[in-house]
Length: 259
Image 1 (cartoon, rainbow, N blue to C red):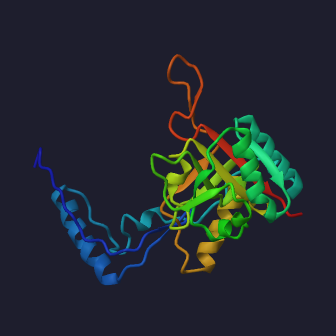
Image 2: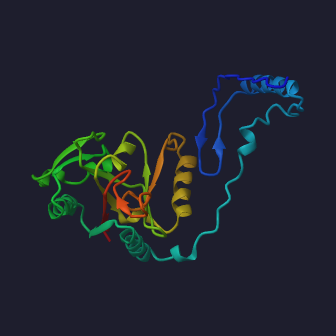
């Protein structure tokens, strides 16, 4: 009927898992058939032809084999060259970069950066086991609180899942070990990035995540992924670039290169 609006809420029991290029779904055949019968009734009412195969649901239509895109040649480098490229591109977008080669120097590097920029030494840090491995107790000047930031916090510390050399971009996973708010709320964001996590291209990093999902059924893809290239900025007002408009005003990356 003209003007007829049909709204149906269906209890979906599928477990959806986004896997960069495919959607994995777990559902019983009975649930699929029942749902498709309802959808077929709607199609008939609208004068459309029902699906011939009840298992060809709308979700299944978007399941396609992953096809790798064209990868820029410029990221096809040795690992040491990828590290230098990452640092160069990160600095080009107003990030600051520091290199250290010993895990014991991480607290010292953080303290030095805070002091040189006249920043508070009270820090909110991601409850990340990788970060806990650093000897924070050796630096009496730092006061660390693990968890989510609030409006009083000015400095946050996180790790990063990957650094993409081709653009100087950081990839952040959300999760209990890394609340996404740590990437945006504080005025200053410090990232501890092990050099082995720097890859050439986006595809290289996404392939590593995809392989982890496929090999470890207990690993679910994170709810949120943030790609961060430099501190927050905008030029909406009078075409003047302003840092810190929608997130950190400063992004400092400490690259831990143990080689």
